[in-house]
Length: 167
Image (cartoon, rainbow, N blue to C red; front, top):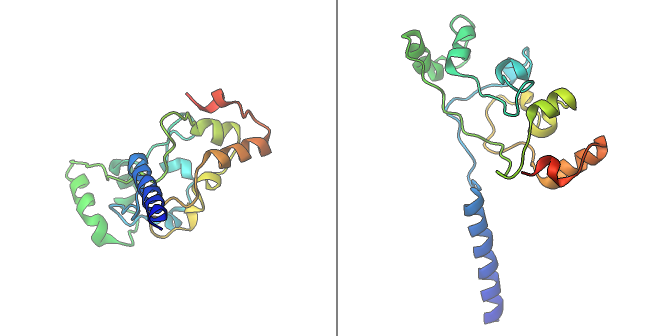
């Protein structure tokens, strides 16, 4: 019985330690603004997330970019946006510090351009249906894993060679 307890405690410690090492966030993230993707569905993802079609990494829009529309466009949460709108109207534009949800390990090379432009994948394939979200999720809507990527590569009949994605 003592041996079983030791094994269970060891496994729990290993899982917890691995989680800390990999940066697992047990509680999820909290975004600085309650951004409503659903209210922005008239625009394609690439309007705000620039670089998706031209670079490996997609961008998060700057506060200055958001202010272009929201200086005059209706805002559903003026109390939440008022602070950074005032800052930007004074010319001191601070970047909203969004918390990152999706990560791939450092040894993996992932290119948004390859997947969006060349493979013509919809953003929702990897990111889930963000267009339906009225508040930011605290966790990724879909799990990004090597198995999921390999399944997709096999279905699309594209390279599954390790060197294609691993540095």
